[in-house]
Length: 586
Image 1 (cartoon, helix red, strand yellow):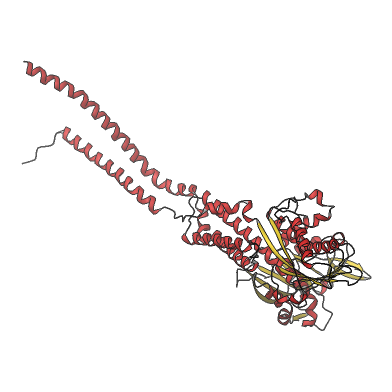
Image 2 (tube, rainbow, N blue to C red; image 1 turned 90 degrees about the vertical axis):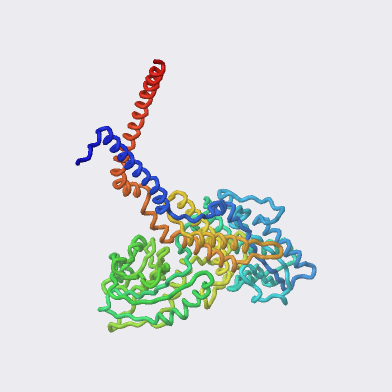
């Protein structure tokens, strides 16, 4: 017996209910899956102290007062004169010049007013970096070079010597001043003040150029900034002997012994700033990418390279100077041996004169020296003694690339008229303690500035790219950089009891710049730069749009049917109620 077929109305009702259940199920799946999808695709961003970073980015955050302690020692000072009084007078004059006295009201001299003024070369009040001079007197018996350190110097003054002022700046931390007469207090004070202030004038100017970037930074300072290598924790120093034509002459050199004798002592002195790894190599068939000009001088044909040809001297396509051993910034020093067809090869100045050193410097790259070995039987070997002039050139170029500035008194003929000034050089290390101390202080301020700029750029980048991953290691490095910045800043602070600790400040500043750059260049952050929001939309839209459109249309239809059903029910209910009422009345 066959079952009775369902009426069409019942079939329609069941179909509508099934369709409605399917639609609701799809919507429910979307609603339940959306939070899961959102959570699983969420980018982890560890919170960073952006407010602290922005506070460091303000101009006043790096304002410092660098303390310099000066001990004055007098020999043969007249009994009527008081050494302590002279020291106090010198301290007051220096405080006025550098605006570190509490009652000082000196103002910065505008550049246009200071160009033809003696004071233009001795910095006055500076709102960014101030030098505070603590000048005290002492007896000659108390003087000991071993007691001096970075920021602590001695001025040895001898009275009644010679007929003019004589000044000698030692390789250590001592200045010797010889005065013909010490009975005139203003004269003695003026000489000592001008000497001390002059020795720190260029350093003060470099701080202004570094932190203020105003018109006060002259062309020389800008050139020095472009010349000097950016600070790095480690450098790779490579000495290369490049021979253009070994078939003409095979050249060798005792570079290992030369490095040990001339370069290693210099680099060891700077090991408290950066680390250095030294390598050497020899390359043959190193041809030039340029063709030197041929000129005739004194009846001899010379091959010369003019200044405009120097930037094209490096043959990057054929000279393999890169290293795969380390990622440390390279410092390249080349001793180039030209081919027979281009010998002798010389570098000439802009006026056509031959450059005596026959060498030149490539900013932030290295240095090149050209050698023209004498004609031989096909083999020539440079001994250590023969390499001396080239090593002196390379050390001088190293000084420039690493930011070592020669200590001098600017405009000495105006500050100290008639004075005879001598600047001693270090006979063994290639850098004096004055120069080393100044480099430490300069790099400390520079590293603090660069660390702040890096952290500020990182904070800006993270705020603009909301999809960038910020892992806990990034947060740790940022916090570490801020901690070292605060420690460096506090180490530079000074008062009457605690002087600036430049060694400790340098250590913290180096760690701050290292941590900030490690955070900024972390691979996990750089990778996310290639997946912007537009890229995500382009990936997801082809997948979800085709599915979403039918679902949305089905939802709209179900809503319309539901409204229609309600409207029909409302119409049926009143008529039914009327029929029931009519039946009861009958």
